[in-house]
Amino acid sequence: MIGVNYPWRRYGGDFGPTVWGTHHGVTTAEPEIAADLAAMAACGVEVARWFLFTDGRGGVRIDAAGWPAGIDPRAFADLDLALALAAAHGLRLVPVVFDHPLAFRASVAGSARVGGHGRWLADPEGQARVLDLVLTPLLARYGPGGERADLGAAVHAWDLLNEPDWIVAELHPSPRVERPLPFDVFAAWLREATARVHAHGGLATVGGARLRFARWWDDPTLGLDFLQAHCYYDPDHDFDLLTTPATTLGLTRPLIVAECAGQGDPADAARGRPPLDVGALDRAARHNGYLGAWPWSWRGVDGHGAVARDTLRRRADEMRDGTVSGPAPGR
Image (cartoon, rainbow, N blue to C red; front, side, top):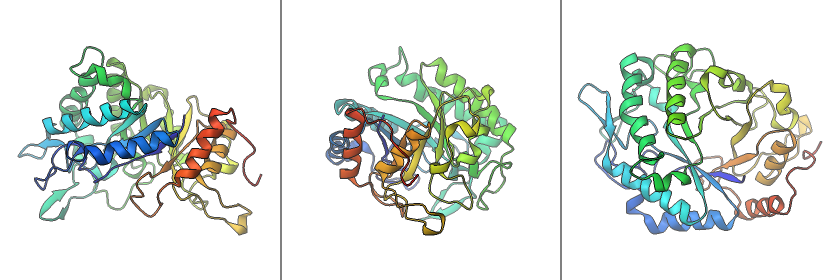
């Protein structure tokens, strides 16, 4: 499938009101978002990865003690509309429930506190609250028999946390994390979260940040349906997508390169690596046994650039015409 990272209009502000009291969610920008989804469909995109509650700055109600206390109804309204618009354009979404800066040390931005919610995943009470008051109502609403089960078909899979590698102690915790989570602690939450996704008829994944960490998320007890690795060319810190067949990772589950640079990878003359656009990255990924490569990002939200739409369209045409894989570029 051809996929892309949307991944937001406003980080943490697309689904429900924010900690600043503002609401600029999907329901306030329907024409703009509908146009984006229509343009994606015209480029052959089938799946879009879209962040929901990020670092807790929007969509989730927080009580006086700092615990999650449920989902704001306006977040549900925004997600209802996002799923309806996606379905209308023949797309499915991968909602990313939280982002790893959730566990970064709290900071103040515009007089409001953001981040600083590591105990939501580290503390048994926090884990239970996230599961019971955030994740389960989300899954129940769109699962079989749910209030908006009609929209559930527009959910491809639930991505439970983006890039947990940066907050897990045994992997590569960021210096911005106040207290890295032991893998076993995070894994306990992830097992239960995945079980709840399955209980509501969904698929579960987690947004792994590196190819070299993929085996950690392949633990069969975690129950993930497919794996992710986010591959931005960085030969000093991760495996090279071009020279790392999936078989060499020893995985038992399929893996998708769910993020790669929207502007493509630059040439590395010293290593004999050619420049690669997003079409070439997708071809290389499939050639090496992965499920494909999804560019970051459609909207060009950071320095990785906006995806070249003509290139994406050409790649979709190749897929439609049966050119699913080909020689890895430059190899």
